[in-house]
Image 1: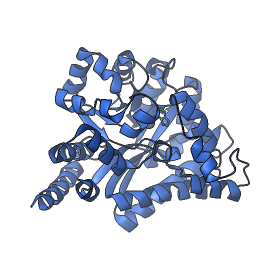
Image 2 (image 1 turned 180 degrees about the horizontal axis):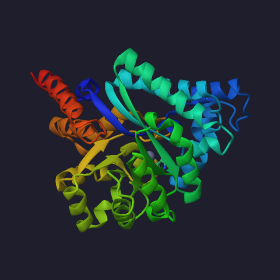
Image 3 (image 1 turned 90 degrees about the horizontal axis):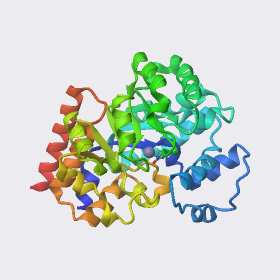
Length: 336
Ligand code: HPA
Ligand code: ZN
């Protein structure tokens, strides 16, 4: 099973680049940029990676991101993630980034986008890994601030494919961002959002009906509402599920209780992703391995999940078909 998971070419659709910052690089960047850290060592820092909620995690995540200042920092961060993609046969990735986490600290918008984008271009040249960027608005901030970010992105539209919505969900419903999403869609961005991670099914309804999102990040709480499940299936929208994130943030008690298989059995289209791999205990392949063991998933289940990762990506239909055909070839060869 481990070989199957490792060998299949796959796409990762839910990944926060700031959440891929591993402790070693975090310390190196802190040293390089002369930023004092609360933690004396990598070990001490790792001990702080115990969360009870999304809010708990966010506090540490923003502290970690504070070592990122210059274009080269964003390049190094993204390159380190893409190296891991290459090692795991991730051949396509859709990378979220939170400009406001950085612009609030005085970092230049162009340093963020150019650093991330340049690394994705180099990875495409070196390994053939393709990437899209998703610019996410922080939902604990105001819609007005999201508008400022949207405005700043105008010069970089050729480098950004979609907009997203992340950070603390409860108390910050999708409807708060109605106007900025409308403007973003008008500019040509594809609308996506985190919904139903800690928020109830109502938040998913709002994300679908008000923000008109084309993919749901997490979406676990869709299971509270049979009508919503039916609606998501009818619209042929996928959920980007993140198993190790869900246990780390106590969205799910244990992996054995994870609703992934139930979602699949209901006919929901789900994909497996790492969310914030440096904080939640594993890259995307580890997420596949752990959830496979916990739920006793079959090879066919794994194949279906990987197929979904391409079919529900933001790639063009012709490209999706090619990627799925390549995947099928590898899968059937392994099955021989
Ligand atoms: N949820 C919401 N916001 C986030 C997450 C998440 O899982 N990761 C990084 N920002
Ligand atoms: Zn996320």
